[in-house]
Length: 529
Image (tube, rainbow, N blue to C red; front, side):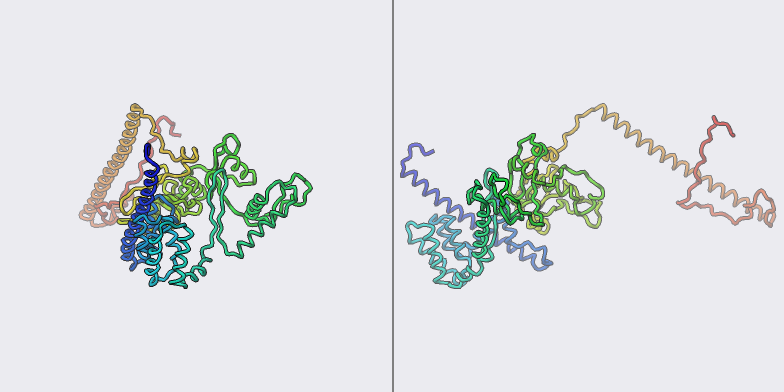
């Protein structure tokens, strides 16, 4: 691409690319801010009649659309929307410098963070002062920029710096970051006393082993963290001396921590080296899977469950169905969301009908999907026209349709990692056609249908004939009673016709009248005794 270009020309391309990148970030932030104001106006129209739990704010609506469009995690989407709002409302002059390519996006984000707690009435002066300083610089370091922002905030709004120190305690967190080769990094932000206490506790445990332990101090401190996670208060020595007092393993605490690991049966037995999946981390190798299994893990087979009548018509899924859906999904199905399926809700894609369970929305694996609470609420309360629509395919693929009509297809992560899950999620292959068998089946079904209709017609004909005979018999008996009254004028004394003295019978028959059942046909081949 740059063959024949001089070094000066190449540096010019780098400068132009940096300015263009900054301008693209500014354009994206402006678009996000404009979308935020529109969604906020829409949400305010629904706020009046909202019961309090179903409101999806304009900020949350914007975060969902931005996260899906950028295929990013909810945390990153919320941060982008908040930064875009800050540039649009609080830092318009800094936003103009970003659009001109004067500063980068990372520097802009640092300015936004440094001015978080500045009062709204002071913010225009802070924005102007910071922008003026940056405009007067030809070059600067990141530390110089942070110092300039902090000095400006302290000079114009000293209370903001104090408020930042007061609220720093709310930023406490521990975050796990996946590393290659089966390792991970834990980042903790704690109060100073707690951090120092924890650091000294790790060092104390690391130094509690004998001098023959082959591990370095850093390795022993890392193993001490693992021991604390398992509920043990001491670190087991790794020396080869069997009589070392530090080799006695301390008993773990009574509380039990559950972690979920998915692996194939071949990996557990050693017949395969296919990797497994550790919830909260990601893919781990087969050696780690077998080490966890040998440590006393509870093994539960996972297979696609069938449809049990008592579970299908119940809103809460059974343990087998829930385990299968979570293993199939692994994460929330919303585009870009990486929250664990084991800490998510199991949502009915077609809503469960609590009044009439037979009406639809059954509790089946093909109608359940893992959604984190944020996106579960989004799908439930921000749906219909102008909201999000959600459908699920046979293989577990979930289609999300955004309010603007964009379609996002989220395929199940478990089916991509494990062949057994993929086979169970696959659409059943159609059976090969056998036209002769199909014709024979159609003929058999037609004959069975004709036989049913013939039996129904025969029964209807028998009923009609019996009704006509019953009416004729009643009319004849009434006529006999009438003639007896005209000719004799007194009741009959004959023992053979006692019914003639009964009152006249009704010569009409009701619709529910039925004749007595037919007598069984006698078998003339059998003797009469």
